[in-house]
Length: 491
Image 1 (cartoon, rainbow, N blue to C red):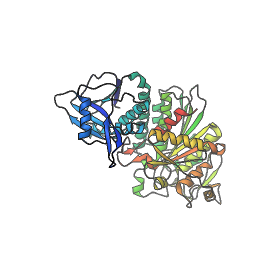
Image 2: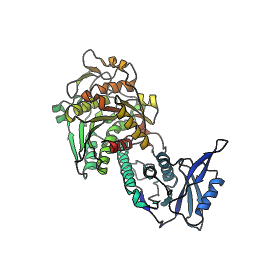
Image 3: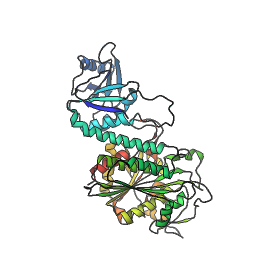
Image 4: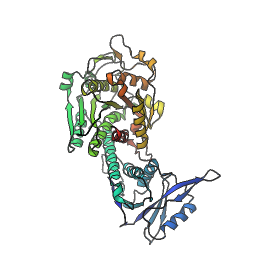
């Protein structure tokens, strides 16, 4: 990962980056820009040169705008003017991401930060710098960014060390979730995923791991996980990861859907829809990475993370539409569609959390429905909760982290569609709105925690078709940044 130093005096000035902010709009509606006074002055002449260039190049100062000025025979050899918009955290994150991509051919850059730069701005910049260059490749072929080091020039570097450390951990955990999600399913069996969790958690104190295999799942009655995983030669697992610091006052359970590949089962998907189903465990990746990150940051909140893991395959032992599944705790589901498998494994995990763990708050993340993208597009998760305070706090954390979520309704008039003639519930009714009905189905397993439960249907934003700001194409690691922000404020 990119090395970032906090310094008060530059010791290498190959490339100097100076911030430019958006100024007041003109009468014609065009946005003007102006250089930002920096905490540490650059070499003689660079400030005046920047002022002249802003006008000559007609810069707007929008976040992520970059103008490069070559200075042969002088120091620095290249001057980069970096747009930071209005200077809030989101703008600095976008600026950092744009800079990381634009300067990828450089080996080292120095960024002169404003005199009054806030910790939030430094965090945004650092996250943008670290997240944007991410690429997942299983080959050494192809160009890699040359940029390996960035210096942040400040008058008091020590005042921002914790901020940069938090941003670095957040980026590292987002990379972990992206790596887990991007890994091809020929490698990513349920046991492989469990092994990756063990490796990630190995050196962190107060972090305990338990992995249940098929025999334990059978003995304890996890019928949903067993049914979905029953068609695969790679048996299902339930990973339970517990972060329990001594000073924790609140216990949060995080649950992530972990379908390591989804063929749709007997209700098989079309090829075009199946190709990217290695991402169907992005919820599990997000909650695991957030929990490991919380342990690394020593956040004072207890977190128990559950990832029900299964491969939904077609075989003679695959579960069928019309089968009745007995979930953990005894509730039964009539399976109307074997491609609606995620809710079946989540139902087991939710029921187990409610009955055995008894947390204060219960959250689940899942790449659950295609209806999520139909309703909200490709970058926004659907959030469901009956708890206004909980919903507001998670939405605020997502916004601060630069991830998008929108609260959706839990329509009570859809509940009747969940009724089955031969079981307690239909797993996937055909009436009503798909994402809402999936949430209502999950709600049936929340018991006494119904008013302290929140569900995020994050199928759409878990994958990006191209680069945009700090998001790189492929798996996005959506949810890690939001969860770490939210967990840091839980008390």
